[in-house]
Length: 326
Length: 132
Image (cartoon, rainbow over all chains, first blue to last red; front, side, top):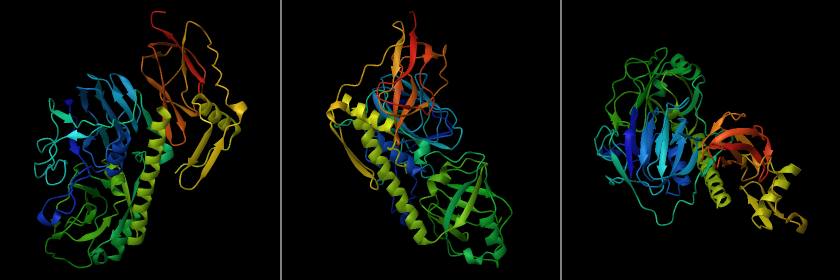
């Protein structure tokens, strides 16, 4: 059992989301930085898709009501366990009664905490993720509040982690979020209305930095920059969209649908951010710059395969570390 | 992905110490691209030498694995540390193993510098326990 003392700006229970249900209006939701949650789960010995916490911009404080192995990944929130620092991308054992505090990350937006066994919340339509718009899943269908208590699934096999645990080398493994002073590079595959943009606007979209608006959230990221123009007015019927879809509303300023994406929309679609880069975009801080570059479907598939290869490598590293510590 | 760093004699020696301390005679490594096997000669199987303790009134903090050390906080003589605090990590390939203080107290001396290659049992710091 864990108890939430302070949730921070937005702390939710998330797993890898609900797949294949958009046709009936159920969004994907789930962790925005799926890579970080998957690694956190592997570190504590869970299946990759176990439910953990997604903490946005720190400010989270939780108490472990029982001895628990936990892993902390994603943005580095300068965490402390009973006042002692917990390095980023680290797994360790928290004694019963210990308090974990997360501060605001210096870079990145979202930190993930996985617990050995996974958070024990009900499976709703195939997932334990919180659907904030629908008000279901996760813990009572909402972001966590002070005083919430959430159980942890008991494990029979144990996490293989002892005491102070071990960590991953974030710099060597390319796990660090992009610094706030730098632009985040994001690749996209062109979508149906890409060619409806004026040629000058297509150039503008891929050659300038786009700043993430402060009102961006789990549903979508809005961007500021020079407005883009269509070659001719378009009126579209609403159609299916998915996380990563880059839309162009009448303002001419693009937006990207994120994990809590709507299941349909009627704005012209410029492209779709490739799945390999969505976690990176999810960690890009509000107000920072993003650069878009077009890629082919084959390149997107290769990038996805590289992500899986990295995950396999990291899984082997984690296995090695557990054997070294044993 | 990690580069293959296992080329320095000191690193191989540290691996030998590590294996020796665990009574291992054979090591195999593979990351999908690179693989090697290492068998230890009998004269390398002697137990790792216990490092000299600089001062009997202090508690040593030692590296528990070979690799490059990363200090996770400012570590200077006079700094206060707490029991259980992870003061540094040893980067062994792409993983980090903790270097943990076994007592609360004050740093008496710091023996390792950031990014130095350390082997199993290398002194990192000496701590004067509270109340000593």
